[in-house]
Length: 85
Image 1 (spheres, rainbow, N blue to C red):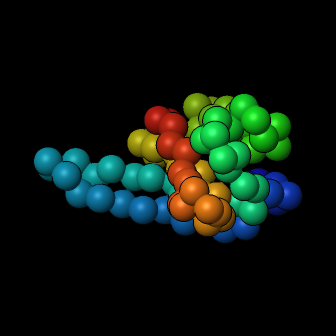
Image 2: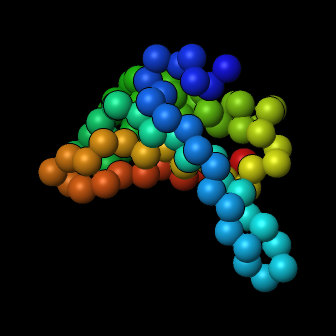
């Protein structure tokens, strides 16, 4: 279950109606910080969370068009990682 993952703080669904189609996005907030370089590969736990959500998105969340990971604000501002489901 997603809410049981140690670095997931909240989960919500965003829906947008665009061109006669509903776009559904799963938004996941985490306590993990985005590295200043913007490369998730530099934070192993963030990369693991990304891979975990990517795998679940492919296998379990077929009805979502996108999965977004939101990290806390830092000196580089808001950071979000988006992946197509």
